[in-house]
Every structure is written in C-alpha cells, then in structure tokens.
Amino acid sequence: MLRRIAVLCALAVLCACSVDDDIRYIEIVVEKKIVVEVPAKNTKPTADAGKSTIGFTWETFYLRAVASVDPDGDILAYQWSLDQRPPRSTAVIGNIYAPETTFVPDLPGKYLITVIVHDGRVYSNPATVTITVTATPFVVGEIVEIIGYPAGVIWIGDIAFEPDGGAFWALTGTSQSLPEWLRIDAETGAILSRTPNNEFFLNHGSEITIAGDELWATTFGASNGIPQAFISQVDPATGVILSQFPCPASTTGGYCEGLAWDGSKFWAGASDGKNIVGFDKAGKIISTIIDPWGTINSNLDLDWNHNQNTLLSVKNNYTAQINTATGELLNNSEVPIGKPGGWDGELFWVPDNFSQTIKGIYIGQ
Image 1 (cartoon, one colour):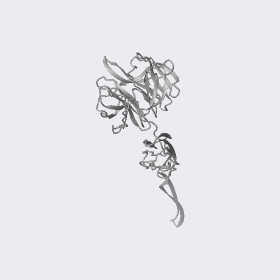
Image 2 (image 1 turned 90 degrees about the horizontal axis):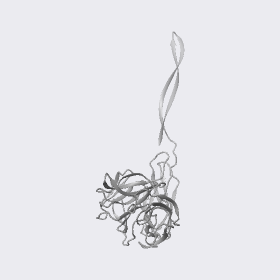
Image 3 (image 1 turned 180 degrees about the horizontal axis):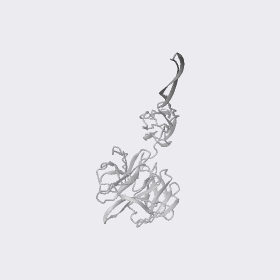
Image 4 (image 1 turned 90 degrees about the vertical axis):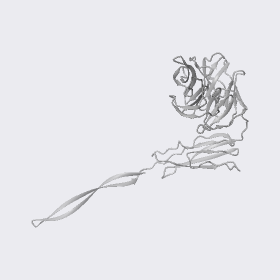
C-alpha cells in the first residue's frame, strides 16, 4: 500500500539588476509542490486455522481460515500445509490455496495442519490445527451412551443442545402436558435450571433449537381464527414468548416440521409441503431445498451438523444429512432411531419416554 505525501519545495535565486547604473540585488523565491508516493506502514496479518477437533477415519473435515485478519484491510492469500500425519498415510488437503478447504484422513492418528496468509507484502505467523483421528468404532444406529431422566421427570418432548454440547434444553412434563423447561447437564443428567412453560401452544408437537444464546421453538395456534404455525423466540428465564412470526415453510396452515439453526439462519419444513426452507429471524426466506425426499414433510426433525456444515434430518425415524447448497441427501441411514432429538456434535440424542432415558445414537459423520 502506498501513501501520498505532498512536499512543498522552495528555491531561492539571487539575481542582479541595474537601475540607473546602480547594481541592485534581489532574491526571487520559487515554490513547487511535489507529490511523493512512499510505502505506508504495513502491519503483519494474523492467520486463524480454526479449532482442533477429533473424528474418525474417512470423515470429511472442513478447514476454514476465513477468520484470518489483516489490520490494514489488505486482501489475503492463503496457503495450507499438512505438516504431520501418521506413517503410511497418503491423505492430502483439498485445495491448499483456498480460504476454506477439505481434508479426509485415511489412518488413525494425529494430523497437524498449518495455514499462513500473505497480504501482498509479508507473511503471517503460521496458525495450526490438530485433528485427532480414530478408526470408526460404531455402526450407524448403534446406541453409544445412555443417560437417565432427571429425578421427577417422566416425559420429555424435543431437546436442543447448546453450542458447546455441555448442556441441553428440554420441554418436560407428562404425556398430557409439558409445563416446564429444563436445562440439563449433558454428562450427568443433573438439572441446571428450571423455567415454567407458560405457553399453551408450546407442546408435544413443538420443535426446539438454540440460536447462539437464544431459545427458539415451533408453535401451533391460530391467526384470525385460521390455524397457523409459528416460529417463536422463548425467554429462557420466564418461558414467555418474546417474538414470533408465521412458519415460512407452511403455505396452507400445516405444522412446522423440524427447526435447526446453522449459525446465520433457521431451517424448517412443514407438514403441508415438500420443501425445506432457510430463513432469518424475521421469517424472510433466504434459501430453499426443493423436495429432497419426494414426499410431504410429515414426521420430520432437523438439526445442524456444525462439524460438516450439513443439515441433519430425521425423516420417518431414519436419518440423513443434507447438503444445503445442492439439496443432495448424504449418509442415508437404514436403521430407525426414533424422533425427536438433538445433535451434540458427536451423537444424536433421542428421549425414550418409556424407559425414561435419553439415548446417544451414532448416526455417522
């Protein structure tokens, strides 16, 4: 980057002249403004390789350096490198010059991946991420972990995990009503907080999700006497609905089916339609996945797989992941797991109101 500096130069000239045979000397000053371009001070950019993670062989990992920054606002170039991998591994990084790329490990072990960025003048310090890989130990549909319901809880509707997976929210009560929200420790099953559910239309058919630190749910009520599905923000301290808007996926008053938050928008289907739509917190539709199953979206649950950036679906009790850019169904499961539930980043957790346990099920990566 160049910086323009204006320099004012003055040149003094001593001249002699004759006036009536008398020699006089006068000084003439000539000024000239000169613009000089000099390099501006440059600040080294900072690379960001993302967070270290764990996973399984042949799982697709998404490498992202988009959080890298240049204080001067210069456009950055990226370069990835695989600096450590297990012996005999032939795994490679997809596009080493892209800000976002992929990596598929082929053997168990540790993989050390580095990214550096360049602002056109200087390279950043390297940033690294470690991927620790084990051989896939489970089969799809296998119950890996089980936690019991908290004491006194006999029925759980949908559940939704907080972003770090350490706790989840659940609508709880009986088969007739769900009068209480619980925040539950995912490891121990202990109740962390209790909130009354003060909304009649938050019930057994409601899907819930966490959007950042906000609690959202689907509700079903009426607008001017006409049945209407809504997306509602719920105050986790009081259980009161703070705001709501009609479910964008529904066109004829059907139930809103599934609710997931991908970090920037919601995804939902509806019992009166075949499409899955992505929409913002005001209900404006941003994206549409056209008819991924070829059937009406009844009995559908949705969650977001932050590991793979795919939409996780449970349709008629069978799981699949959806590439939201192409609408392609990925990792279709032939093993029924039940519905509804929540994804914690590793397992899909399904409440079982008969055994009063929540089952962590492996559904593939």
